[in-house]
Image (cartoon, rainbow, N blue to C red; front, side, top):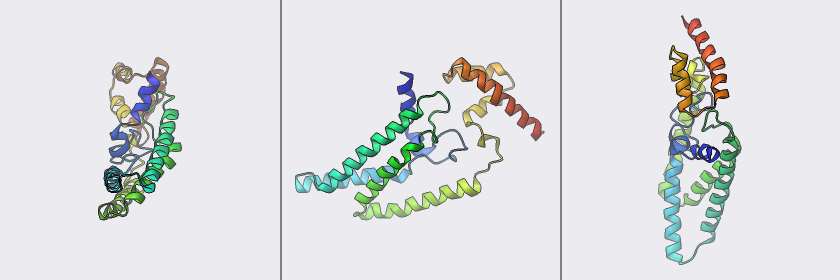
Length: 201
């Protein structure tokens, strides 16, 4: 049951579209795994596909190809999410699911390719380029690696600001971490954080 719950965390819209994962080493804040325009492309492409099916009273080859690509992409992405869910640490996790990103590219590319015949989706390509440019700017120029949160999960960082280890332990229990994991975090994160604080002061 825990495995399926872990897998489901990777399908949350916040992870896929808006915020990504907690760990700032892997992804800057404000960006999900997919660009937001991919959701718009999905809506537009499905609308075009529906119109084509209604007009021709059959399923055109282009629609069949689109659906095949989407099914293949979804299966590949799901398999990567399942592989990344065989742990309790930092879920959902962007790097552990890296094997699924070619399938994510297949999904987005198929949507834009199919819907490129429409003026609306063609204009979205420029929006996608602008979003990607912003991502590169934030990741390579603005994204500060000197910040403490760059190394630790943001939610764990908030818990580590507590001066009492009992508060930290309660936080980890609420997240469902097993006792060996809590011991690891106490030994590693808690002590490292205190060292960082000492250096800053």
